[in-house]
Image 1: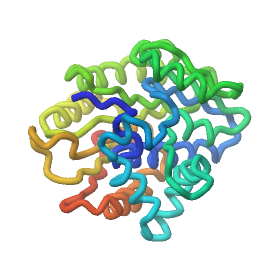
Image 2: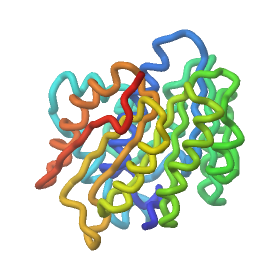
Image 3: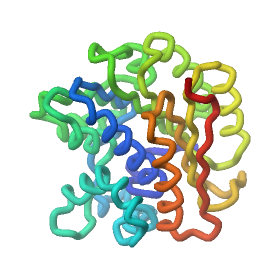
Length: 282
């Protein structure tokens, strides 16, 4: 399946992915030492929700619009704050007209000592990304294949940070590539945090990914998913999955509060969330 960022900006999968990213960054910010974020498939950085691609399906109306308008539990609101504060800052009038991709979310949560490397190969998106990050010495936009970047920029000199791997899944091989790329990067940087996003359309590919990750025998592999209905081969995108390797200590507990609140906000019949460990932390 093709999951190009611009067509799906602000949808339920983006909210899931970016809310968890916000929590990971919040934990990294608790220690004064610098960290680096490597965003391997960064997209354009900023999306005009009235533009032709986001407007075509209007998926943001069932995603970020619902979450901003929801009155969920106070605990979930606190956990969402780092992410939603960035969305609100991009829409100062209160009307939702733009959505930040992962590079802008990261950029807004960096401290002076932290750094971002954002990689995008598609020419139009790469040009937009470079423009969005221009002038910020903490952030660098690179026109490079994300899979190549994953091998080239790990480990970072800071030795703290997170790698976000969020490919378009234009090729079925991207599922198997996730596992092999993670294995290679983890050998070079075993203490880094890795976030691997994947779409859920049917269970065969996602279950095979879980089996591959278990076979890697690396500790601390947390899986979290949100599904809007039962996966079927003809149903299109019905779920969003994230693998977090070496998650911050409190993240699993936070996700047990956050993910059900998001599933409720999406208000889909049969919406559900799942959090489990593919490999326990040491």
